[in-house]
Length: 104
Image (cartoon, rainbow, N blue to C red; front, side):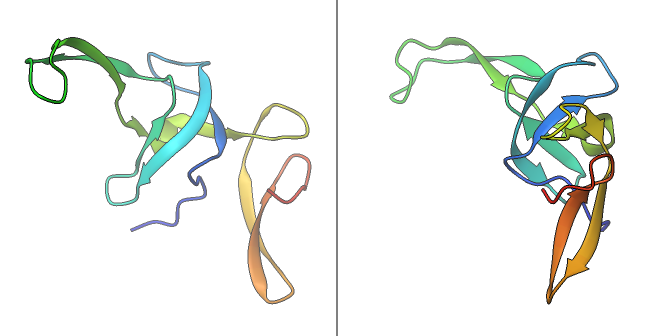
């Protein structure tokens, strides 16, 4: 399993695929499959039958996972995509933006 540098809550931009250019917040990361669910990106339609939970039924839009390699973190300072580095400050590791050298 590889070390992922994207965490839940990060703001990311899709850099490849059908949804290229879309931005959103990471809701969940699946480390085993190297995929992330990004808010408002890669929406799929799911047909649901009426049930106690949803008595109406019908078509529901929900986010599907997207490959980690297809998303890039947005630097909060420059608002552009950036790579993420890890360095030791004191006794703990911190993530930083390689463009602005700012701690994330």
